[in-house]
Length: 454
Figure (cartoon, rainbow, N blue to C red):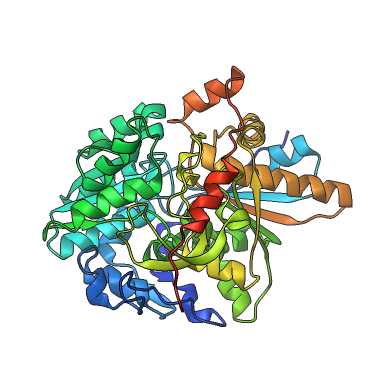
């Protein structure tokens, strides 16, 4: 049996700059709007939430933004991350496809999230900030920011979506180990949380609600800022170390992907992998087919409306144009907690509108089937989120088999599932269900989109 082939880069090949796809887009992304005036916001509008260094990255159109050396020094703990050729999976599928996966589960928190948590904590420390608030779904982002906060001496408070708070106690324990405080959301600690609990004391929570709580607290104190783990431009920017490394590793393999696959919730791990490849395409280089994969129970790209919406349920954030299910939408409590956000990153939404990517949605049982098949072939247990990308990769590899065509497929295996064993236990016991959202709830949430004249 052929073993997986591992492609490694030495520390000298660690990227020195993040790649900003905005510089290469044929049309600029729509402006971010002030919710009151509906006019484009300025840096001063974001200062209550973010340090100016991150605001400048958020609005930048410069192609390359230098990675500070203190950030690169932390990255060296696990970066460059490995790229594998999945020969055992190829053999199990009897496919002529060449399957590669970029494995981000080697980070301290077990996912891609520290790629942005570390620079966000660094820039906030440099600005004199003492505390960061944030939200988390599956807990990967919360544990990553807790890790980064410990490194840079910043207090971290995490509002964790209640259904994940109950499902994933070990993620909670990891955050607390790093020194963060983890609170189930909705909570009684904020006006946003209390208003939700008055109507529904057993509300399962959502990322939109948790964002409202974190933003509310951050806006009340000068020494506190808010950190977001996905969606915004500067977050996607930081993740591009993934795709840049993959480009160099595929050179070692003497290959280039025909197909790129990533799971999508807010869009950060997906963008981190695909943006550098799309940048080459946009500058006249080789074209790639890009597949964004999301859960059928929270299908912002495949069922959402491309419109201006709030990033949070409490309507405290600026208005961004994105594929959205409506800020009031609460998805069912499926196990891929990191993919339960009501909207998609504005930049990912924009490139979808430009026709640069395609999207598909899967139910969770099919994704867990794929994750188990991957683990039995490759030995790595994927996170429930990553299972969506694995499912699409297997489907594309089987399509290659049917067509008798050899294509190169690259997926971002964005994290391991070691903190998600209850989900796998439920799957093996037959307790895992494909949970549909209520069509009437989606219709109501979309009907409540803000009226924007732009």
